[in-house]
Length: 276
Image 1 (cartoon, rainbow, N blue to C red):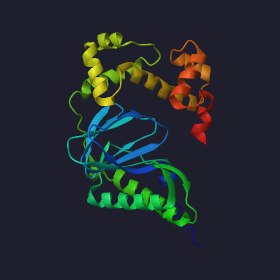
Image 2 (cartoon, rainbow, N blue to C red):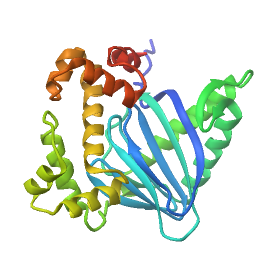
Image 3 (cartoon, one colour):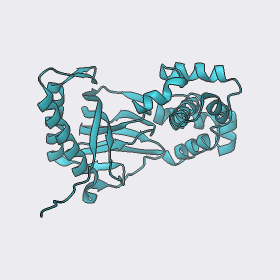
């Protein structure tokens, strides 16, 4: 009697959040964010500067990077060439282990992701790139688009020969030190002078380094890291009062107000949003 061979699931895309093609204007800089789903950036032309956690690197035509959930990332245009990318975000089950940050997708990968983009725009209602709903009668097209996306991701993130070495830009060593200090001090309240003194640099050097890679102020980014850590802790099951204390807030109401201002919803709803 034939029993067959069981096939385990591998990289099943469960939800599409956004999918768009973008032309980056000169001096474009998105100061960054983190969220609880994956985001991929595929460079179609020009050069794109990427900040991913503590790493700083660039993408050129035929290269892709993948940001895992909770990784802070920022993006900017580099150079004078016309610059275009396809950017998409999604949640998935059974995501394989990924090594490296830059994946060479080549010309065939550009063609594949461009075809997938066309299928996604044909199948989904998109508002400013954000997926809103499935178009009526497009169930099969959307299913095929998602399957093609799964194959695209598996092909390019698991093929070791296509993974390229990340070459950090100059100055990134200090940037990594700054982020490490902020992360180690996440439960404290810091000021710019204290951070600069602890790292042995001047306040202008500190501010210039952070602004170069994140286009924001030092304390602004430190506060953003606090909110992102708060989101992760709340999503793991900790209560609001516990998280407030963990991050150095003596007043729970003040913490809740800061959290809501940053994310647009109260910390008490964070766990629901993570699991829905």
